[in-house]
Image 1 (cartoon, rainbow, N blue to C red):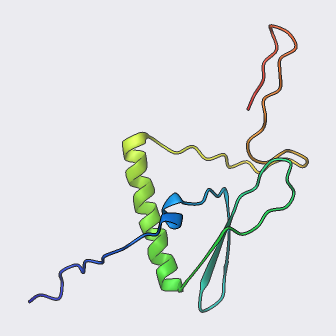
Image 2 (tube, rainbow, N blue to C red):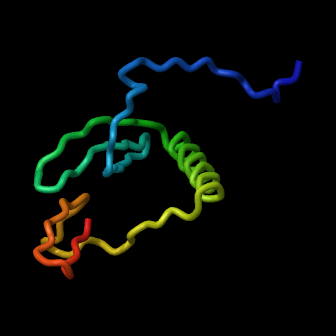
Length: 113
């Protein structure tokens, strides 16, 4: 029997984990032994948040995760088009995240989200 065959892993997921957690901010830190990924979400008008999930992995697994993420982003973009990333940091006092629409005061006014 060949040792080069990929191993199949039976993965189970609980009901709570299957629901997922929405995050829009990841804080990444590391030491010589591990990478720590803290996932949170920043909401407009709320200056405080909490960590909803923390993932800790070895540097080798972090690099494998990076490569898997790159591969999946490339597959996504080949199917759905390029993902646009706003690279300009927010200006001072500029709100972060989704913004509520304001009502227009006349026909020529516009609002943005």
